[in-house]
Image (cartoon, rainbow, N blue to C red; front, side):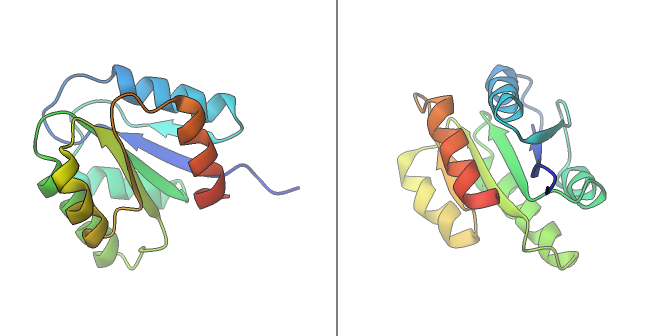
Length: 130
């Protein structure tokens, strides 16, 4: 039997609101994923270091601060620097619809906007990470 996929859930930057990240972390955990929640105020370098150390299949970022383009880009750059582009990056938060295509072009696999159900996130994660 294979082990459950590991997912790092992280709050990059200075945003201190983590309720959504915790809800997603719990939903994934309750549906068979091994979840590592890094807590608030994480740097992209620390997030990637955790993902590498934990042999994570994915990194989920929660960004509500408006710095989503910069923070997602820095995480993806850090993954490239460690030759770890096989780690799937996804996220959610207050992200304008117009920026979702830009994030996809950067390499973000999926963005979940407010109102997305945890069932939809879990279904996507099963397909993308398992």
